[in-house]
Structures are given as C-alpha cells and as structure tokens.
Amino acid sequence: MNKSRRQNRKKKKRSKWKLFRNLAFLLLLLVGAYAVYLYYTAGKILSESYEDAGREKSDLREKAVDPLEDNVSILILGVDESEKRADLGAYRSDTLIFATLNKDTNRVTMLSIPRDSYVYIPKVGYETRINHAYAHGGTNATIETVEHLFEIPVDYYVKVNFEAFIRVVDALGGITVDVPYELYEQNSKDKADAIHLLPGKQQLDGEEALALARTRKLDNDIERGKRQQEIIKAVVDKAASLGSVLKYDKVLKGVGENMKTNMTFSEIKSVIAYGLDSKLHIESLTLEGSDDWSTGAYYYQLDPTSLEQTKTILKEQLDL
Image (cartoon, one colour):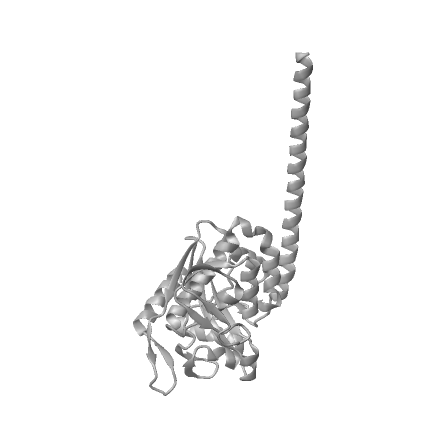
C-alpha cells in the first residue's frame, strides 16, 4: 500500500515537472517570437526614419565615426510643425539639445541650447536667434550653426516633431516628473490654456509632458532647458524599466514618420545600448547668459566664459 502511494506521488511530481517544463518552453518561444517581432518592427520603422543629410561625416572629423568604437555626439532637434507655424511661413526648432556619449565612462552629457541664443548662422552670414537656423536652411543649417558655436563635430542628429514626443510618452503609459508650479499652457494643436497642471511630482501623459517641456511663461529658457532634460531622463528611465518591454512596439510605431535621423538602424542599436546600461550616468549642462533687449527684440546673450567652459567639457567627453 505504501509502495503504491509512493509511486503515485512520484507520478504526480513527474506530471507537475513536465507541465512546468512545457510552460517554460512555451514562454521561451513566446519571448523569442516577440523579440523577433520587435527586431523586425524596429528595423522597418527606423530604416524608414533614415534620411541622407548629404554629409558622410562632420567636416570637423578626420574620418567617419562608429558608435561601437568611438565617442560620438548627437544633436536632438524638437521641431514645431504645427499648422500655426506653417501659416507663419517656416518651421523652427523649438528645442535643441546637444548630447555627447562617452563609451569609456558610460556618461552622456546633455546640453540644452536656449532657442533665443544670439549666435552666428553660417547659412545666412549674420547673427540672430539660433532657432532661425532651421527656418533658413533646415537640419544642415542648424548643424553648421552648432558646430560653429562650439567648434565641435555633430556626428548624428535626431529630428522629432511634437507628435512623436506625445506618442512615445503615451506608449510608455506616461512618465513621472516634478511639476515646479501651477501652469496653463497650449496643447500641440495650439489651443490656448488647454493644459492645466498643478505643482508636485505626478504622472503626465504625452500632451501634459509636452506642455511642461514647452512652457517658459513663469521663468525662462534656461529653466525650460533643465525641465526638458529631466523629461528626457524620465522617458529613458521608463523605457529601460522591465515593465515597459511589452510596450516597445507601440513606442516604435509612435516614432514612425514623426522622426528623421542620419543614423542607420545598426548605429541606432549601438546608441540605444547606452540608454539600457544600468551604469549609465547622465550629466546636464546649461549655458549661462543674460537677457538682451538692446535691439528692440529679445535675444539671449551667451556668457563668453561659460561658453568656453562648456566647449572644454564637451571636447573632453569626445576626447578631442
């Protein structure tokens, strides 16, 4: 009798183990299938986002860089492509963030460039607001302006419009950020005061996050730049979390035709590896300066000493 019971218990254990093994195998198959699907989707979407900017490398580089081997720089352009801006005759860059990626130190340095910075624009041959560079010559004119300003190569660029930002944040299920004060801001369709936020740490959807990133009514462009960097960090943290893995397909589809870059799919994969590294350190920089109304229009005059210090930091990050 006891022998029969022992045999039955062994059979049950074997049956449970077999069920567990089969479930584990099925789970591995599903994970593998999802990984293949993501890879295919990413390859298709990001390949469609590629555009030839007509420059194999920066003129400030002796040879083309490889993000797997070299420290590289990326210029992030947030472009206002709303109907209101189109009616005014030309799109302008609403956000400019210059980032350097150092593979040896696992450090990303992000510099926000105030949109009203008074700088020399090579495309037109005179000084004006830096966000006018895009209106005069698009992405390449903006890159030339940034390279002239910092005397540092811009290896890659990523250009996104408001829709891409909104869809990525929504695909991730929102992001958690600290809203510094109560604010009313227009939405992506330029509807005045459509977004109302109260101060405090909270979760924001895409439209709300965009409003926080754009607003500067109660402070200035420097604080605006700091907020934008914090929002980018929040997006990176959320995307790197385990719970966001199953949302990656929505994130990719959210980018879709709303992003343009001169990075190939292979180069994008190398750059994404930075963001997924648990040892990644993100450093934020700002450009000091002062408000200038001397011409009758508003400009942000960059402080020469701060500009030189920033150049030194960025060059060190790129080992130049």
